[in-house]
Image 1 (cartoon, rainbow, N blue to C red):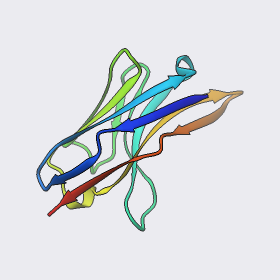
Image 2 (image 1 turned 90 degrees about the vertical axis):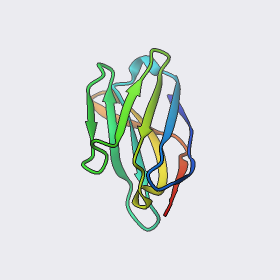
Image 3 (image 1 turned 45 degrees about the horizontal axis):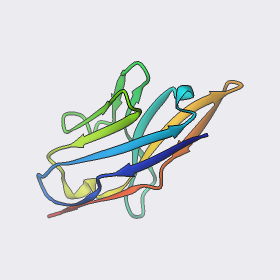
Image 4 (image 1 turned 180 degrees about the vertical axis):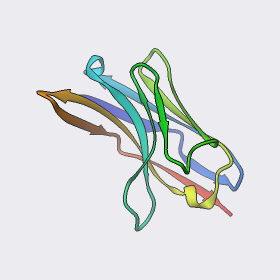
Amino acid sequence: QVQLVESGGGLVQTGGSLRLSCAASGSIFSIIAMGWYRQAPGKQRELVATITYGAMTTYADSAKGRFTISRDNANTVYLQMSSLQPEDTAVYYCNAYTTKSATRMDYWGKGTLVTVSS
């Protein structure tokens, strides 16, 4: 089992910045990758960025050039968001996945709300 706790959401004006944090605990040795997803009102949850245990990163097109995902050695993953736009308003969820018997196991945090005012 992996537990994830997000923090850092809030209200920011257009063009502003925020940094989200996600602290992992539990069976952290089994985590293959962690990432951030978001879900805006009335929309499906979508990938924002991921980072593997080896620090390889991927980004959604909407995040490239504005968001940076990183991790420290204490099993915390960060999402630095800059040049925020109203369309970035969403609940941001931290994700971690492991595998068991070749089956992917996803774990989710409870989410943190980011609101970008125009």
